[in-house]
Length: 193
Image 1 (cartoon, rainbow, N blue to C red):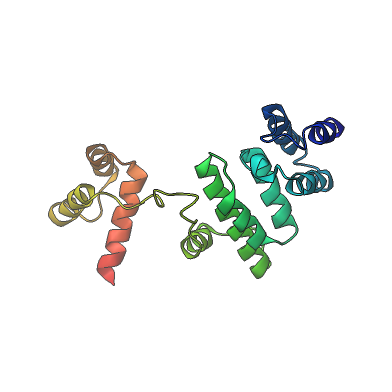
Image 2 (cartoon, rainbow, N blue to C red):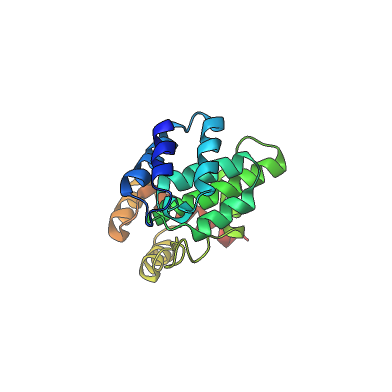
């Protein structure tokens, strides 16, 4: 930490700061993950200097900042930080975005964990901004061709295929047997209602 502070003071007027400084900041953030008071001090120092935007290109620094903001109950600040940071690891940023919203819901409901359904609903209510995933969220629906093949099998053969049929169908449509099993279970539920 002292080495980082000394290097930061020596390079406070350099624009951009040396890569060595940014790498050291990322390494420190990783090392101090289990020491919230020290991490908070480090984050405060980085966010208070003029090189703030350069530090936010490092995913470890971004993660540390988000952790500190969540720890302090500053969920909106953590979200804004993610929207404007310049880190390249977009998938990890989207995960952090979801984690912020999960924590917010957990605090609201005074619980230590969320069920998969609660997480799903939370993600649907709080989609990440375009700056985090410019290509949009991953579409989890099967292609029309796959759905047609599954519908055809349900109509012509059975709506409750056995294990061997599911495995064969999974190979044909390039899915996992569990996915085929779930698709048919959902199909039967939809047919009932």
